[in-house]
Length: 394
Image (tube, rainbow, N blue to C red):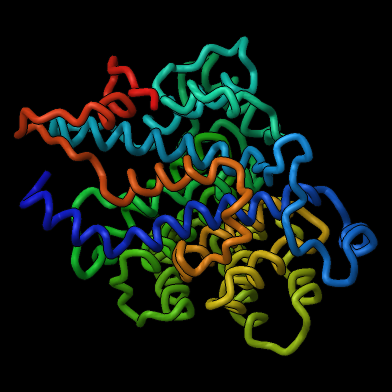
């Protein structure tokens, strides 16, 4: 680890609250929206009243608010990133981030379909409670089966399919949260665009349509700026969104579908400033089944309620559509904005995998405690993110 470890960790501590808020917030939004996924707006209001669903509907067996495949895959994204960057820290070289994440998605696939042999890299595979199906996306399953069979994963330039479903964007938040080197003033715009591209490539593993991966790149941009700062246009979410828009124009210049994405982004910004009700505004943005709509709904809710996590995620799930995914992405943004400490206790107390999400958030925030220049070994970290090592079981 570069520099003095104590000083390094003290600097990183500044970001812990936002990183934790992003990860736990995503899980909270997912858990709130999961029970009403596939429900119409009218069905939600008939079941929960005019305000819609406003609190967890916990599993009676465990009294937990369970999460869907969105949070499951987000956690496997995190371990893939950390595995890759650990290799970089300890060997001085690493491959594309998407390659490591793909291998960890195969482990997620194994938890859903045990007959499919995963890569065996992610320590999450050892957790029995992750071996459960929570309405996994058919595109994610079929794309990973195909990738495993043909020994190649999808990329932006060489897609496996032309899906623009939200299964790519709903899982990419960890890409934004791990910055290998410490930057006191945030990443430069050019550095951040490279990270945005990583987000697009992680989404393209399973979702090959430009409107499946461009929104993922935009989400990574926004989340990184919220957490680490450095926006060239200002500190507000509106400023960050304006910079994000510019970055997407540069990163995907010439892409015919870019204009369709930018129209959704602009609509979210415009609607967030009007006096109409959330339900009416969200109807204009869509239902969230496709990635550009998920992004737009999440951005709208976060712009509308930048200081109120509860209002943001509640607005994001009470509509006719993919409520767990719009809730998850809104939770990522809103959680990063208010920080873990700003999330009401009711969203933390009964959240499934709460402790695990915190552990992964801290791993993303602080990074690998070992390097190729040191002989010191952190057994806990090595057991999670170094090939051939065994994780310490508490």
